[in-house]
Length: 357
Image 1 (cartoon, rainbow, N blue to C red):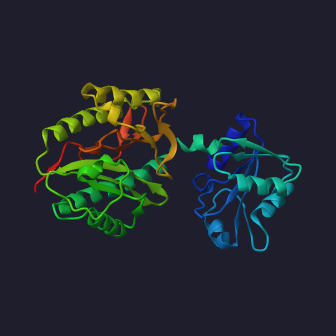
Image 2 (image 1 turned 90 degrees about the vertical axis):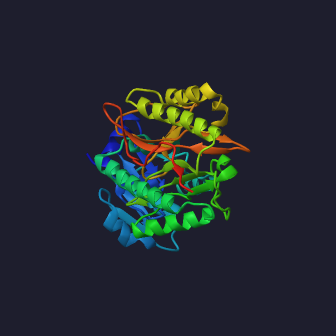
Image 3 (image 1 turned 180 degrees about the horizontal axis):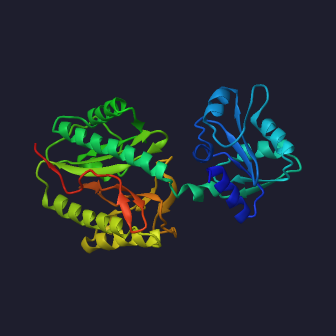
């Protein structure tokens, strides 16, 4: 079954006759098209991918399951959409309320008089959560690259090297492996590790520093996302004890990721284990997120979200501890849920690494 057919089945189940898909990640999943602008109008038995003249040739090459139409200036996107809505005889058009802006909706409302516009959650979000074997293979390949990147980075991480130099080395490594960065990498050291999303700076590494890497590779439209924290030289008692408790929590959560569990319960497990050493108060973000065509793909592992865990989903598992004035650490793996549990796609070691300085 093609992805277009999967969406069409979902429309029947949701009692929706026609939907316009505007999220680029959803359009890529549906059609294979990677351009920056596109609208996929899909009915229960037909559909069309709409784009502009910049992507006429590209869309025709990439779009596997839908006919393609493109427009050129001075015609506007909403006018072109209206043409096809009229051709398909559409009177009700559902759209993704989480992706369409107020300005775009106003244009559509003006261009589509007599058409009822229905705000819904994008049905593709739920469909995209279950990855095909091909998608899992693509993410696994990205994980292999990011694992190797970490191996390389630890050979050059030493006192006197700056965080920015580590970033530049990572960027060069990706180019050598025909990959790009999945997101802006986090490479922070010392007290700066207490910033969960700190940016690499000119700070020089020092002996005794914690050093956190959060990085990913992007290849063929898919991503990896891994985090490891190491110590430059022998770890202090606080660093070692905190890391060991964090690793205990992270490993337990990976083990718990089995079909049928609620993601909220896995998030709670991490906090329960961290609280054995009064560390849960320093874990302020969710346990993880979906991973695939987007780094932060559909789905969240959080204390506030009921999330069914099902076979074929890919998740990050990334608890962290961040203490201002002392430092922080995070351990993150990418996993795919299987019938019996999960398969860990990131292979870089998780034990506390104390670099020889």
